[in-house]
Length: 205
Image 1 (cartoon, one colour):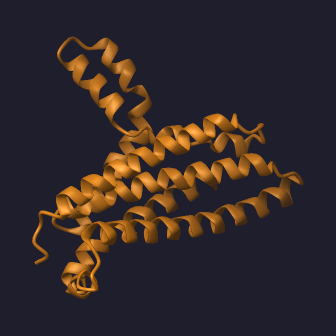
Image 2 (tube, helix red, strand yellow):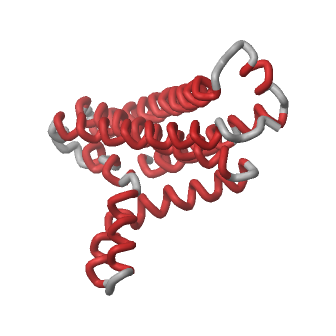
C-alpha cells in the first residue's frame, strides 16, 4: 500500500506541476496575472505553494486511510513513525514539485517535461544511493564525473522511511528528521531560484 501511495503521490506532484506555467501561457491567463502586478518570482512561488500544498492534502488522505487499515488489522499505531513518514514524504515532494516547475520553463511541452522529470526522479530513487559504489569501480575521468553526479543530485531515497511504518519501528532521531527537512528545503529553493532565472528571461508568448 505504501508503495502505491508513493507512486500516486509522484504522479500527482509531477502531473500538476508540469502543466502550471505552460497552461497559463496557452490560455493567455498569464498576462492578467502579471499585470496585477505580480512579479514572475511571485508567480513561481505561488505555483509551487499551490502544488505542494495540494500534494500535502493528498498525502494526508492517503496516510489516513492507510493508518485506518493498519490499526484495524494490527490494533496498534506508531503515531510518531507515521508522522515522520508523512512529513519526510511531503518534503521530498517539495523537491519534486520545484524540479518539475524548472522543467516546465525548460522543456516545450508538459508531456515531455513530465516524462523526463519522472525518469530522472525514478532514476534517483532506484540508483542514486549506488552511484558512489559505481564511481569507485571506474577509472578516471569517469569516476570523477559519476562522483560529481552523486554529490550534486538530490538524494530523494533518503526520505523513504516506509520501513518505520511497515515494521512498526521506533521513529528516527528527530535531529536527523530536521536535517532532512533542511536538506529538502535547500534543494527546493535552488530549483525555484533556477526556475526564476530561466523564466525571467523568457518571452511570455
